[in-house]
Length: 321
Ligand SMILES: NC(=O)c1ccc[n+]([C@@H]2O[C@H](COP(=O)([O-])OP(=O)(O)OC[C@H]3O[C@@H](n4cnc5c(N)ncnc54)[C@H](O)[C@@H]3O)[C@@H](O)[C@H]2O)c1
Image (cartoon, rainbow, N blue to C red; front, side, top):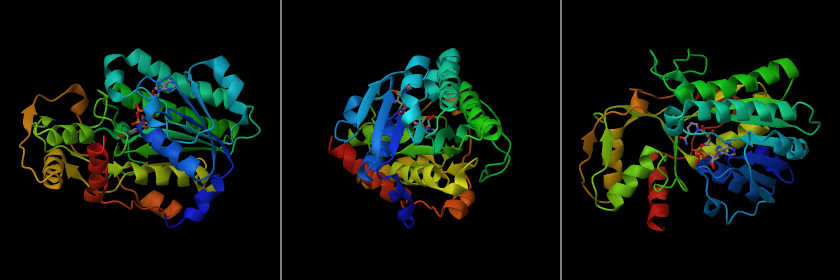
């Protein structure tokens, strides 16, 4: 990373990663541990897995729920940085909106309330999602474009994000929000029924099976390699400029699911045609690509990986399993 002098400041800091046994969380925790930070993970293992963190030298793992007031009250005051990634995913959210509401909004509010008295907090970082934009009139999507909430998940992610913003405005809490676009990469396990589209396609093509595509495959997404996502998150967490801000984290590159299948085929030297099946409720977004100009200017961050490069590393990891 060009500005890696900034992230070296994490060395020796006391950091809590909620949802740290999950896909993005374990990559983030691994990078923080490598930087010499003192990392604690709290995760209820709803989708997270201990195998994701078994080789990471973290200080502590707590199996717990971010909604647990007593637990949070007991542990939270000592941390300088909180990276809040724990959340129910879009599939669970659609099936059980009440559970989604309770974790994604209630869990976030619980953390913020417990942090109000903290004397040690340097930054609370909330991981939101570009799903809050829904189907937009214009692309690429800017941070201040209007929201169009098309799923319970989008509602709850914006709810958590809004509480985060309100604690900055009302209580001077040093918060920042990052809105992730579709993240893919190492540790996104295809055996997890909630994993992203890339791991599902890789798993199928690797095993000489036809990947399933919901709809016509011409829907587009902005795919972000997890190492880039983690770099951007680390910069947002440490930079003085980011307090009270919200950043899109993606690539600015629009990719259709059909071209994604073609690229994964190419990397496997195969030519397996996809099978088109019905559109799901959660596939109601036609085109998505975000503008990353704000984060580029403010934090001097740009993605290091092209889709091809990120996919090659991801495939290498899958092949090693
Ligand atoms: N992966 C993406 O493409 C993407 C895109 C946009 C936003 N995000 C956001 O990034 C964050 C991380 O996503 P991910 O892809 O790593 O998902 P993930 O499901 O792999 O990780 C979430 C982690 O949170 C844990 N968790 C869930 N509920 C919890 C609770 N009540 N208490 C404690 N732990 C709990 C899970 O066990 C899991 O380990 C989430 O907040 C998600 O909304 C991810």
